[in-house]
Length: 196
Image (cartoon, rainbow, N blue to C red; front, top):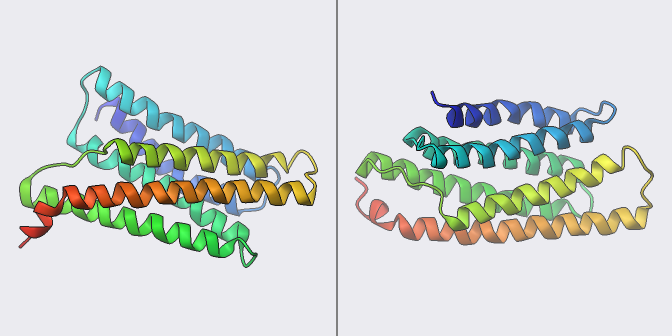
């Protein structure tokens, strides 16, 4: 197994640890979660760059790299669903997480059909990459806000504004999820039409 694929696997292994750090209320747990998520996000950029630069692109990497991203970002969204609980922002997180999961299941299904029907591994396209970057930026910002609250007292009004910004960033990612998902579905229509 080459180094980019090892980094992808490391990101997958880090996902449940990251989610535990988000949810278990030990001291500075948001800060630890932020650091781990940021490091995992960096591995996403490194493994892709390394695979292309050194000609180490594999079918395993094409399939598992986006899957590792989905695991990591979905874990963060589920964590924020828990954080917002039954507050006035909870329905936003439920809707956003549903859109993200619906898209990811649909795209992963098309990839599986493409492999089964035509032996083709569908790699991430530009829209999918933009979606992933927007998710990681939004999640890092959100975690940074909550990490900052572990060190300084943020006024309630300011904290409410910051939470609104977080939700806006998450909705932007959800829109990009829907767009990129629709493009994947359209691009995979031949495999759907010819499925047996």
